[in-house]
Image (cartoon, rainbow, N blue to C red; front, side):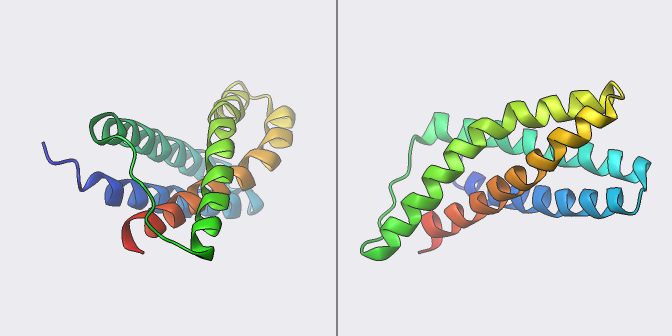
Length: 137
């Protein structure tokens, strides 16, 4: 199988997740709870598909070295390191946030979601940036 398309697919999935997260935020601000719930489940599903695709790609291809030089190399690694650390944190946070909503623990859900959403957005957006820097610079 040719795995070379997966980085582009992964960037697309991250982009879709970003748009869904933003839509979910707007929906909850409008108090459209059902649409918010469906949208956030779609964001979670999209991120889950991304994670599976990402793991499959790196299992078969391994790591890809960044070839940029000069100041852009420092920028890349600052973004990459923050992305990796927060990506590891966001997985359990998203699961707990989703669980609390599912169990109708809405006060606890809301409290954690206020932290989870911006971090999840950061991870999704920086994932696309890392892809662009790694494969298109």
